[in-house]
Image (cartoon, rainbow, N blue to C red):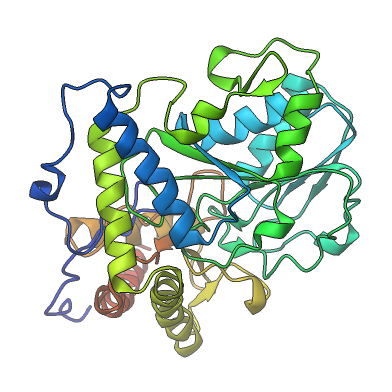
Amino acid sequence: MTTAHPATRPANPRFSSGPCAKIPTFELSKLADAPLGRSHRAKVGKEKLLAAIEQTRDILGIPADYKIGIVPASDTGAVEMAMWSMLGARKATMVAWESFGSGWVSDVVKQLKIDAEVREAGYGEIVDMATIDYNTDVVFTWNGTTSGVRMANGDAIPADREGLTICDATSAAFAMDLPWDKLDVTTFSWQKVMGGEAAHGMIVLSPRAVERLETYTPAWPLPKIFRMTKGGKLIDGIFKGETINTPSMLAVEDYLVALDWAKSIGGLPMLIERATTNAKILWDFCDRHDWLDNLAVDPATRSNTSVCLKFTDDRIKDGAAFAKAVAKKLEDYNAAYDIGAYRDAPAGLRIWCGATVEASDIEKLTLWLKWAFEAVMAEQTEAA
């Protein structure tokens, strides 16, 4: 017989890893200044888009000589834009330790078919970045959203590298300290740590990346939405708010509101602190209970945003069914939404702990996790 469920639920049970929880102060009325029904090429539209770019630079501390662009198709579009536009000039090294990184491997090896070495690690582990040849172009994720494993730092990346580093940082930007001098191309979306709306991506280019774009033409044709140069020169307007395709000005306004919130609470240091505090609540919970553990093997590489957990109780016969039942029970009781592991990942839970999530809600969630585990265990034992 299971105990009664906890008396209080998280005030916001949205722990999805994308789109993620809105900022704690979000209200639809905050979007009233969106220039709806106006052209994004009008003065007001360009001003909003440029503000999004420059406020992103300010909060993330992106160097002044780096270019920042708003691009179509979320982080996926930004990564594909970088790979299709820049790879092929030299040998590449494709690095993956979870499903999204594996997706970039597949696109480069099977679609672009360029000379590439593939370096992979299993879920919960990470590739030793010190063993990579940085005279090749290196493509990697900073944070493995579906494995809960992140790079501890960028120390392994040399300053005198000859190749480009292309980093998918979508679940890291605004929650982790990214070393911009080690990253030539960095991509992310608004829908992760900032809780923005989907469909828009951002691409950040170092001077070395710009040089590659202006001196190298890929052997394959480029779709219009991937083209960042014209006549051998960077299309500078892209990086001033003149987007390649039509953006949603409502989504832009939503992102601006989130950026204002981030600045109001103390900027990047506080965003990182909030995410780390949230994640540590779950890490400590795992330390106190022997039936749940972090998927990340090395504590130094644990993600502070997409925390992935696995059930370790020997009584569990079907891990996937058990994890699914726990996630469903929590959703049925409106205690947690969308926390099942990613479809390609090992069975378990994935709980978003980014800066828009409140620590008090994570604390309440842990009580519900314990209750749901015990309830599902009792049900399955009784059924057996």
